Image (cartoon, rainbow, N blue to C red; front, side, top):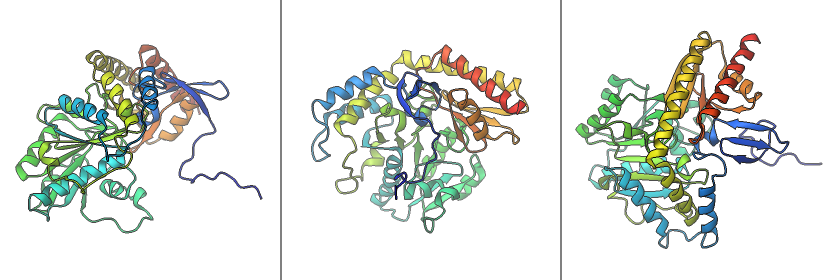
Length: 397
């Protein structure tokens, strides 16, 4: 008997096979052209097949691919310096392969810090409902989404989950056991919700007052997606002690990192953490090339300009379809349309996909968009027209 597909049934992709990509577009094996406004879930920050990143990777492939961290990888030292030079509070970096690995290490750093300071009872981490921090055991427990926890045994202890934006609950939850507060400056999976600047400053002050470490998950909202290299840089006085990054920092090549203050990393000594593939020479070649591009002031200004223009267009679309769109959310080029209860976000995603626009969905019935940061006015106009057409298709339905 012939066997079927041998892959796990964890995904349900459409019957489309993309053969190649160029800039903000993907092309199927049948020659159809799609405008990509999800970019591998905010990963392809510089679009598909960017030449400068490809050249850096190809050059490294002719030298050495893998050493493990038993030996120095000079590219790590170079990229770590670039990150820390861009962040006045940062002193130490550990390279990973993915976002969920970065979150795991971020939480380990927080607990290890308090252990090293003689307070092992401080291990609890306060997180927020609607968050997404990855799929590993600790990461799904940190986020606390029942859908992702179901069937994987009892919840891990040490995590408290609060409603997003409930300041009184946060104050009440802090205790002598609290090690850290973990939050996304722009919540992606939970509905593309940006935390107001005063909240980031308030979290910083609260952590300083109670001796708590502040962890930011900038896996999705970092890598210049908001128009600053990292999203928290929009807010003076709102910096973290520990930050997890991934997705766009590799431009499509698997790369993650944990960036910390000197204090937060001082108890992470030999034997406390490790990785075989993390920080490999090829990933470092990609990461350095990506950072040089996304940190350029002209590039950042482009992201700010195009995101402001596109958001204004989306606000116009909201005014055009007031019974279908309730709110435009997000920051920079991480944007969402909060849809009315009568409109299903997946239905709209499929409607615009039929018109050759790729977008995503998020919680709270939000249509999520995270296009390549290189898009221009032409791509923004094209996306807007397709969104308008998709909304009309459903309206006339």
